[in-house]
Structure formats: structure tokens, C-alpha cells
Length: 181
Image (cartoon, rainbow, N blue to C red):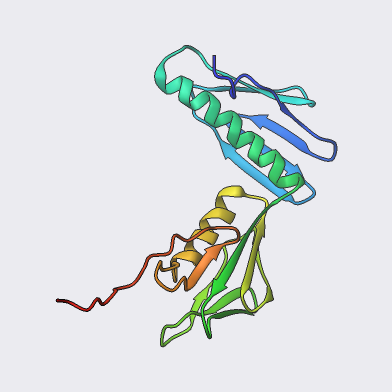
């Protein structure tokens, strides 16, 4: 039995969960999310918890069992607490600023890069070298953070670029000139 899949997903107060026809809808204070699970899985809700079960021990069903439970748990956490990714910008003259809903990046290219977040995702720039991405959907928040980071990945020689907060960049040594014999 899947250790993750067999655990129940507790529904906190203030969150409503509706299960019908292969879809689950979760509503909470931070927003509402919807998910259509694989037809082989069986999802049931009693108002206090959500239970995911599988028909047999086939390899695909075992994998989908834990996945389905984790996705539903992430939805419940997203509508209660929300998700947040913080990005730091390193480099002289590198900065970010807000333009309405979009984030404008000045990261060493001739042109500015404008990134517009998807629906349900908000972006803040508390200072010019920090970008905070928030939302209820874990996948959308992570995907948008990855897109912003990909616009100027951190490079290993000088450490310049956009990186996740707390990310360690392995620094490389540049070319070394030795006096040859």
C-alpha cells in the first residue's frame, strides 16, 4: 500500500470540498482550485477528510494513488496558506520593477524582459533585487518562478543572474595563467 496515498487529506475549517464526476473543487480563503483525477482512482469526501483509493496493485495505479492524494493535499494547503517563491537578483545594474501586473526585468540584455503572471498568481517587488511570487496553485507559482529565473540563469563564474532565495550557486574558477617554462 502506498504510504502517502493511504493517508487521509484533512479538510480544515473554512474550506469546502466538492467531489463529483471525476473532478474535485476546493474553495478556501485564498481562492478556489479544480482538479480532474485519473479515472482509475476513486476519491471520496465526508466533509472532514478526503480519501483516495485504487482498484489494484498495478504499477500505474500505485503511482497514481500517491500522486492524486498529494495533488489534492497541495490544493487544500494552497487555498488555506497559499504558496510563495522568492527570487533574488545578483549583478551590477540588474533589477526588477512592476509595471501594472507584469514584472519588468533588467538583467544585462539590451532590452527589458517583461513577464506577465498567469491568473491566480501575484508578483511583488519589495526591493529592486527581490521578486516575490504568490498564489494558491503550487504548480502555477513554481512554473512562473522557473520562467522568470530562466530569463537570466545564474552563471557559475561571477554569480550573476536570477536565483531562488537560499539557492547555492557552485562557483567555478576562471582561467588561470601560469608562467610556462
